[in-house]
Length: 315
Image (cartoon, rainbow, N blue to C red; front, side, top):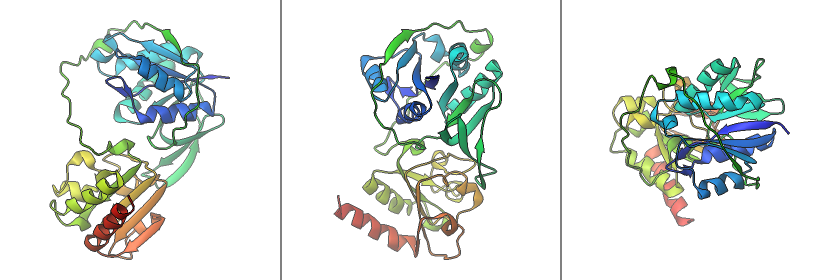
């Protein structure tokens, strides 16, 4: 079967969930080959990648790959892509930039924000702010596809996990911007927004920064991440890093709960590929109900605490 490269997303040697999703997706289309870029490759990481189907693991352990911004990873993938049928990366901010650079280097087409792939590398994709769903296919070169996190449920299926060390000679252009400092962001108990299986978001209807404790309470009961609409972040009620929408972060969880969010197209573009959407809004004419699988017409300050209480009872 054809080899499909999957760029590994990892933090301090720990393989991120989105990589397991990409390996699961790659298995349906060919032979998955993981690409580890940078130092920190461990036996535990190797076992994890093999557990989810990586038949081969290309390891480029040079620190140069992470000492410079983005470009070295694109050059590494360009070197390996000569014998691959496709390259899959996570549709994160960095992943999409790598995808674009790689497509230029290999003279290939690129698809970003795919939410599914079928035979022939045909991608399911939302365009025009999420208003239209299309099937897209690369017509030239080796398909480079950035897939949204949480689009595919990771399923374990053991692969050989054969390790192969590779080296890459970086061009002067790839060394144009060096990383001079890294600051570790303190991680809370909640999952990362873009990778969370459940997201609870609050909007203008929350009313204030203090009232976001209601949203946080439900999120913590569900083991979910907290999101916010642009109206809420612009008002200063919640940090901008948690904004979901076209100008914020794109999420695709198994469950998305929108509380006090009207459902403007800007917000819908960032969450409408969620598997199940629950809307809570006191306005029965709110556009979010057109998108929701389940809707509750009511005051979120009454509905959400009751929902939180019921979730806690069932734990």
